[in-house]
Amino acid sequence: MGELVASILPRSLLSPGVTRLLHLLPLAALLAFAVGAASAGTAAPGTSVVLAKVKVGGQPCGVVGTPSGVWVADYAGNRLVRIDPAAGAVAGEVPGVRSVCELTYARGALWAPSRTGTLYRVDPVAAKITARIPLGGELVDVVAAGGSVWVVSYGGRSVIRVNPRSNRVARRIALPGARGGGSGITSAGGAVWVGQTQGTAVYRIDPRRNRAVAVRTGKLGPAWFSSSGDAVWVSNIYDNSVQRIDAATRKVTATIEVRSVPVNLEVVGADVWVPNDVSNVVTRIDRASAQILEVIETARNPAVVAGWDGDAWVTMFDAGEVWQLRPPRSP
Image 1 (cartoon, rainbow, N blue to C red):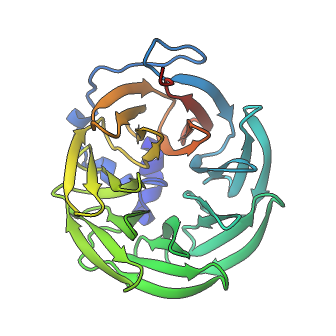
Image 2 (cartoon, rainbow, N blue to C red):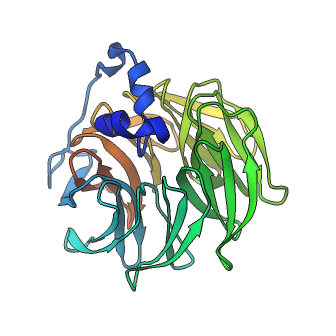
Image 3 (cartoon, rainbow, N blue to C red):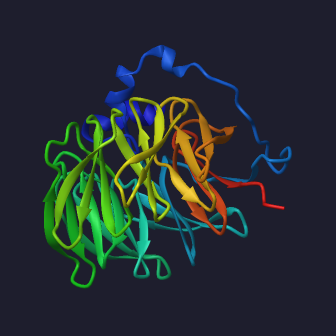
């Protein structure tokens, strides 16, 4: 997302766009440490294999696996693209979704929040938009949890709870004291967790009370999230680190230093996959030990990771590609 960051975030944030953030990052932050590379189709023992590099064009951003295929949001092309994992090729698309990056799949539908303030509901089998839900503001991430669809408003510094049965807003929940904008979202330990772009705390929302409470992390820019059920994994975009937070105790249990600008990470199996936007690498971390297992060189600006059928699918925002990465199998 280097160019993604430079072109989009003034009104959004990292995926799509951390624009403003990169102007503040020192050049020294771009220096690398040892990188383990995986070449297409082959890998040394203990390293991942690149199974496919799917050309989708445009600016692939969000990605999610579904029974009908792997779906990708093309931010510039205003469309959702379906990849057939078996063929490793584009198999269809849904046009008409404007300025969408993040995606989730729930209740048989794709949910796609737009920077224009619309939450799109898409039938992936019929390949058509079934609802356009007006929420307002700039919508940047989404998760399904507790019978609701939760959407983050960047400039509104809030979370919008949507009833998927009626496609209507059930509640708007402020993020008290949030700096910058609202960002990533996930669910863990019976709660919804939300990030911000410039503060040093994340937010935990109790779905029964619809109230956000700050959880201090001590790292700047806890923006993007993933969940392993019992823990929340956070990318700190300013501090170039990933943290693990125990969902029950709300305490940080590990901090891992990574390459420049970690963004939309994902837990896939026993690993946490972290795209490092500016560094053009993906970092694979062991969930249990919180140790880095490998650093994989990629195309330009890896943006978002999603797991499907044991593999990690990674969008390359400025390269117009989606990579399918397979971790080493346990003996």
